[in-house]
Length: 191
Length: 181
Image (cartoon, rainbow over all chains, first blue to last red; front, side, top):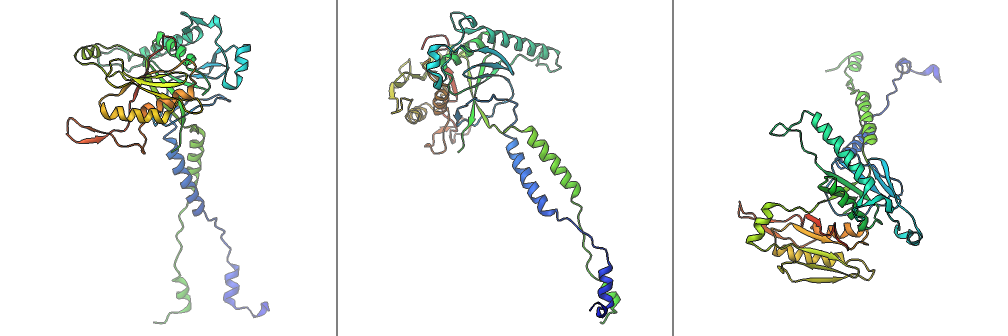
């Protein structure tokens, strides 16, 4: 059969084949992923970390928290700027309430008639001093040429089982350490 | 006009292929960076300042009784009231699960906002045993105006145009940071 093939057919067969990978569809997929990521990136401009087992409540708020000092409260203890500063005490009464997040602050950790949490106060004061030192060294100045004042914002990321009594003690401690605004963090509710 | 076979072959349309490989490289790098740096936890915030007394507020209070809208959470009910009797006190019992009836609280707040459109502050007094998720849910019902809620309008003093409000009482202050509750 081969003997009857035309010269043109033989010439065409001799040409080396160029194998080209079809990249257009892959590029389409990647562009779609990129657009999706860029859209979701705008809602994740903070560096707040979380802890395993922490259950955050849902909120209808639309305000995205900017970066600030942050405190995580779990049923087991408090973590300030990734350092565990307070361990809660699990006594017999609190063990009965384990499902609802039962725990108590140690008596030794409290001051000012049980309103202030001492280790938290110390950690907040240390962070405040550090922030003021950085602001003093920074070139940013206000209209009168003074270093920018300490913003005094504390973000609180609490487990949904934590009670108001603990939150109140934290806010009181923050207020005595010079923090004026608290940001209660929650997970964004869809819809 | 007839052409010779050789010239016919030459006139075949040439394919112009864009080199997509560098673009693909850039996209893959960008996607990798975005995936690495983004957080998948969609966090939102409810801001609350500590109660402060300002001289301006004191001066204002002398001329006019403030609303000082207060929401008190108790074991079995929620009370919405004003220490200066600017509104009629309302008591909303908890729902069948023993939790604050956030829908009823929200509806009551909408009615109050209709009357006091310029007011943005609410004093929140929860019980000590209130859990954080209940705090957040009640604070949402005090602050957020949902798209399904009836519209509330406020006249813009500069333009004279009635404009719809986007939120209820945005400034929630805790009223019992020192006291027992």
